[in-house]
Image (cartoon, rainbow, N blue to C red; front, side, top):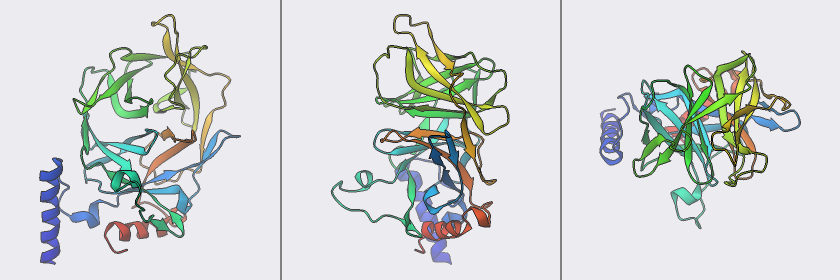
Length: 318
């Protein structure tokens, strides 16, 4: 028992000095890492809907998570190679924790083979805390920013970060700066209005995604940025697409697509920890949706066998 305690303390000390991040609270890996998984829905293009019925293929493991991870405030983005996951640090309005999708080209020689992690014959997607930059900072240039929710995208060149305004129908746009190792307010378009919105939108539930990486100015003005905002308290989301007039830089905004079918989320489990879906397009152009799920509240119909397996995997018993 004393040896195990010493090993945990040694791990905490090394994490603090090597990675420069706040060490997890005493209590060890056993208690604080298996707090959540990601649950991915199956997309039905013809119905423009996601179904979240449990299957081994629908879950992903978030590992190396510090105990102060705020699972209710998360976002994802795909950079053309891998999926990236961001959560706020609990109680913070300016610091993100950053995970990346476990990938052969990231961990080892790209030509080497890595044994997949499998559960009941299905490969499990795993997100690891980024070792070189586990935390990303954000300045606070505007008191109007609603930091309860956020969304991230990758536009083919840079990571972008979006927050809603507390007082107006508009989004604040940030861009990742590698020199600052954090996000800074976008100089060209720091604020983007939301236009022609229906009266029953719910600004507490929204998500943003980029459906391709084309940087050219489209002939009709509509870019690849799509904003989804919930219809009232339902699990149906209205669509808005970013319009950018190629000849008038002041004519820009997320315009409501009145004829577009609403995006639906069906069979959401009761154990999800966030109101907002985390959306991304993968490298094949497929729309994906994730919600963070509490392991401690997962019921028998929602993958409790996977929960037990994940705890064993994380704690080195497999």
